[in-house]
Image (cartoon, rainbow, N blue to C red; front, side, top):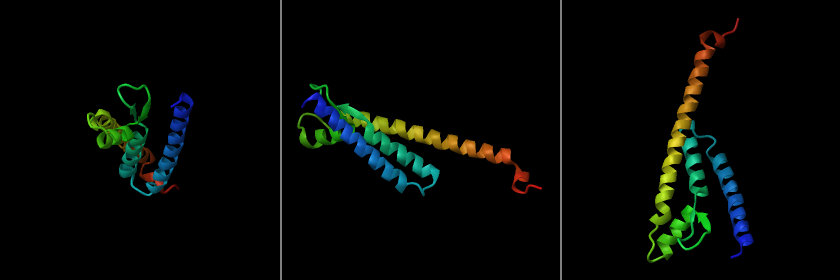
Length: 123
């Protein structure tokens, strides 16, 4: 595979990923913040985490594809070669999502405190 074909492949994958994430964003719009933020962040991490295709090659591919290929098609390599780092990245994404939900709740609580009870009925 030439470098140009490799880069075009990544470009096509990233354009498709943006499309999937746009649809996912639209599908989760009506969910509560505590549900939609983690769902959006975890799917993004799943789709964009790269991993080496094989120890002998310099090319990279999405980690979920490498893990799936290793688990189904390779005899001597388990799916955890890319699956382990992918799970770690998903856990990091989940922690980031929980922190973001917490930050949004604190911000909303602060806005509610600043507004006070008199702001609902201006005179």
